[in-house]
Image (cartoon, rainbow, N blue to C red; front, side):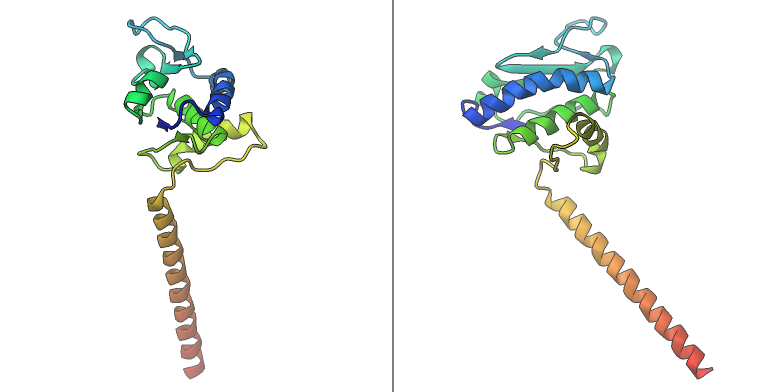
Length: 175
């Protein structure tokens, strides 16, 4: 996750909306979420401010927090968050998806998972914003290549089936 041009009007507007939307995402997910804490047994409110977002799973279902921090991003653009596929993954991925959809030129999102693995976040997003557009945040050439390969395989299978049918027809004619 990277945020480019923190001072742009587009980022400011999208950020303000995102801060309003995150509690909706958390509530709708049904997943217990925590903010910053030193003690795994202590659950705090997620941090949602003008300059920083901090969200993690709660208790023993936490791993790495999603932290979007204006000060850190300016020094080191490109944050990342590993969720170990714990329940809060749906919250993190939905937040990232919402951020991207609000300002695709500002919020850059990548994933080591496939777009299909984002299905729970996509479903949650569609429940919350049923009429809003939704698209994969990363221009993933690998997924496009996979789709092309699948299409080619389907075409080859169809051609093989047609050849088999032609052979069967010619066998019947010769018999």
